[in-house]
Image (spheres, rainbow, N blue to C red):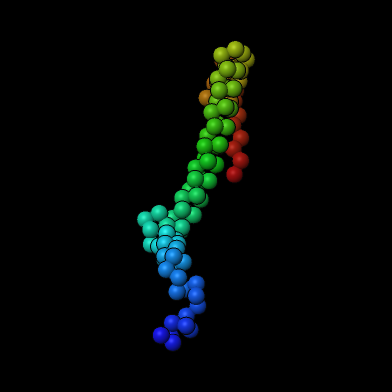
Length: 98
């Protein structure tokens, strides 16, 4: 019994020992352990950044769509810039940057 007195009290208490075992189990051995939760939090942040990017793209496309519906000059501008359309009496020179 002398060796039991050398062990600290908090380590002899069955409730504290149970709590320590529970915490160790949750941190290291559980299916949803601490490391997996950290990894999932990082994935969530990446997905939220992606969501913000795509929401910004949707807003830009909606703005451009409303502009194309209401402004004939915008239709001509888009046709000339994106599809390289031209009038019969015009010439187009395309300059590509390296």
